[in-house]
Image (cartoon, rainbow, N blue to C red; front, side, top):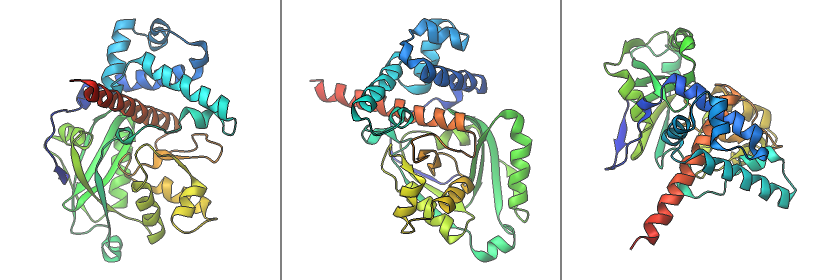
Length: 303
């Protein structure tokens, strides 16, 4: 099962409340808001684009993001204003720039990466039992696979891709025994709960890939980097192309934040689970950061 060392917490994110249909609507809405932000659309416009009433859309967006859609639009507008004043980066870069404090990250947690040994790799995971499950996340359907030593995969996709995702995982671990989790949806949701302090990962990769993944895990909350910057951080400047390959080979979505790597011009770039999903993940992190920052301000001003 998933090895998660937790600390006491009172808030719990209701990930099971976000269905795959909700995700599709949110993904479309995020793209629509970003494309029309300069027109200053109101909630009725956003809701109409999502095929919902204003009240339904506001509730869905707040449940998913933690803030209102108007607040998210205001953040995009502020990013555009900063870009116009600065004049040294693309609008895309400004739209996804950080500047939020620590709460911007999915979790404030410690991710420990354990490498599969050469022998385990040659044997295709022989002797390992991998428990797997599908379940809803804020970013669509996910396949979670765990060994006794930690998570081996967290793969995002559409529900129609479930069979292929599981087949691909079995092909990568041909010697392992696969068993379905007894309460799979809850196990997937647990990965996204706030209040986690440690997540253990068991990953297959070359030493170079592990260096890249470790560097990704070490990113500051909300921080985004280019491929060239990431290459420099692992002490191998000039290896941006190889770094891109390692980022693309990451099999654990979100926890190893490969979505935070952008092109040098600030564009989204590629993403193993699709560029539109990358946009949604970045938007969700920004919204959660804004919500946490607002909560912190309110708590500090409350007598």
